Length: 351
Image (cartoon, rainbow, N blue to C red; front, side, top):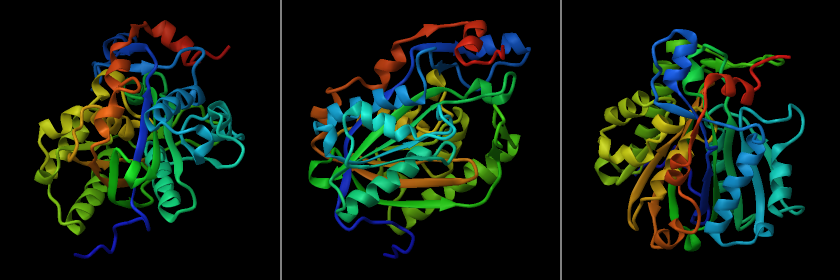
């Protein structure tokens, strides 16, 4: 078997703890469409951060849930990496604030990562490398956002708020072991935001075929081929979900069924275009997974790239699922708001 493109760590590693956080406020696509006179967008509703929430608070809540599942002390972490495209500070790391709030400082690596919607899996790759090399036993990777969307733009229907944290540790303590990973990136300018601009810009339909589909399919096809696997070998698959149609279409092209994709499809009720989008779907899948299940995870980040992972769930999953709130618990906890409150909460009115 040719493993030329697959990345393996020097020692077996996996996920020892995971946790998500999704704000309770929701705005429906119908409400956004009413204001702008558009047709309703591709999802039912999306999560909106409140006045007292930002990327850092979301990251902290998700990380606390992950620590509870991992049952380790915060000071055992040797790295905290936060992936986001909406950090509260232009120049000041979010990761140091998160690490301080968790009680993990001062002896650890901390830093912020940026790669649009795959910043969370970019941090995950770094965590796998750090722990897999033996430099430390535990590393925390977070993807979190209070995603931006220009008023009236297509992104406003899907760009949501939320985050997920994954703690990487030794395989013997893992609830899901990483069997291999692969990253595929190109300079495909489908999405960007220049300095001092409030909202990102995108290439419209260009973000589809040359962006999302090309990168996810390339990463997924190669990792499956080089590991000698096919869709039927997996219990579940999770793809980045900027809407409902894209991951379903990508999964279908790769041979996955709707049943394999269903547990990770959370975009219809919370939106999902943010740095933790793919790993939030992964967390929702872990919430229902059973020992022995194999899971394919493939993220996408505009700019553009995809990180693909093959995971194998262990016996530890059942006891740890119930230690912290599940993604479904946060989806059920909702309070609907109108566009006026949404504009206030998201700072869309310049005074």
